[in-house]
Length: 129
Image (tube, rainbow, N blue to C red; front, side):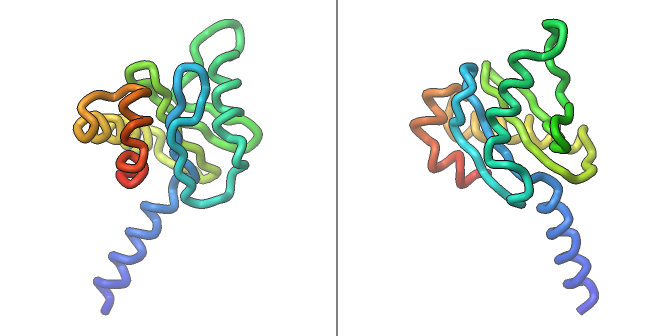
């Protein structure tokens, strides 16, 4: 009984680290969005894109930043933004590695990682998330 409870706790803590995962086009259009915890505003992709697009002093936005109590972690793959949101204290390297692996898995399944391939295979990509 004890090993089963420990495994259940590990699964629940791993799944509880991010609130949303979304993929945006270079123009800021949401291609795919998956909600996990429902504890951040639904407008997070728009907030994220505005923050990245108009970052302070014309510099590139860092991979990890916070806006209004929500932490945004993102990578850019083939011009697309893969981003997560969370209100929890998470390991940035762990989440950034997750995003890189998501991009690789989607590329493996779709053949190429671009906006058209994601739109054509959106159901498959959503199920992979």
